[in-house]
Each structure stands twice: as C-alpha cells, then as structure tokens.
Length: 188
Image (cartoon, rainbow, N blue to C red; front, side, top):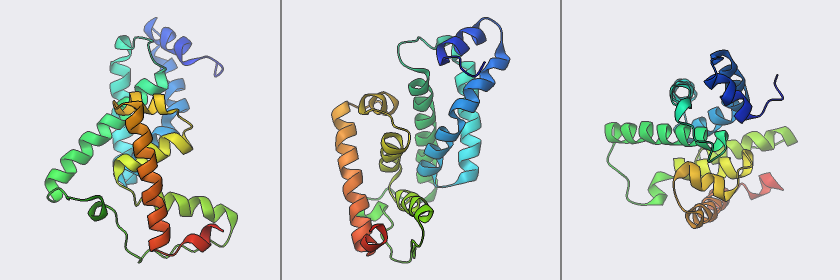
C-alpha cells in the first residue's frame, strides 16, 4: 500500500478512509520537520508546529484541488505556519532588525571542527541554522529536499525570480559565514 501515489491516497481519504492519512504523514514528516527546525531553530517548537500543519492539511484535504503536487501544497502550509510563528515571536522578543548583517549570527564562538566525513553534514547543517529563516528555508528546500525553483515559488508564494535571488543571496551569506569564521579549511 506504500506504493500508492499521493493522489491515490488523497482520493482514498476523501472516499472515507481517514486512516490512509498516516501514509502521507510518514511520507512527509521528516522533510517538513527538517524545514521547520531550520526556520524556527527549535526542535520542540518544530514538533508542535508540524503536528498543527498535519492537522490543518487533514482538515483542508477536501479543498485540495490537484492543481499542484500534494507535497507543494503541504509545504506551503508548513512554510506559512512557520512564518506566522516567527512573526509572533519577533513581536514578542525584540524590535525588527534593520539589516541582514544584524539578523545573522556571525559570531566566531562557533567552534565546529570537522574531523570525519559524516561530521561535514552536521557542520553544514549548523551553518545553515545560522541563516535567517527565509534563507535557511530556500537552501533546505532546494538542496536537501530537491525541490525545483518553481515548487519553492509556489510554497513561498513568490516569483521564481525571487526564489533564484534568495538562493543566490543565501549562498553568499553562507560563503561569508565560512570566510568570517575561517571555516574554509573545514570544507577542504
């Protein structure tokens, strides 16, 4: 039954088999959780938001129009919910920061030293976590979730050109993080 397409699963749910929703949860929970952790920078909040997102998607499954892939539709719910959470958090914690340099934690107190190949993945993930939420999201969706610029555009509700600009800026900010913290040698 796990070889069913998303559309077949959705049709089954709509026909009165709500337990089939578990297949969609299993299929998308890890990637959605990864995106949320990178945006929220807090695993407990990410778990809570992920549950809310799956609940929202389930309650709205009847409004799914088959115009986009389910994954794109669901990631849009995840992304928008995370943005709402971040917006509320920003209002509570502090005033908005005026420049991208202020948003990024460029402190050199991070002491990630890569000694083995598997450490490289963890190292890069830690660096991505230093990015602002929208940049971390774009990097995650494009490189880790293998989403196209068009799919990311739908999820983030921006133009494809804006996605490409954000990807470019995200790469530049990551490069600057590596250079500022003298981590270039860690990647070699």
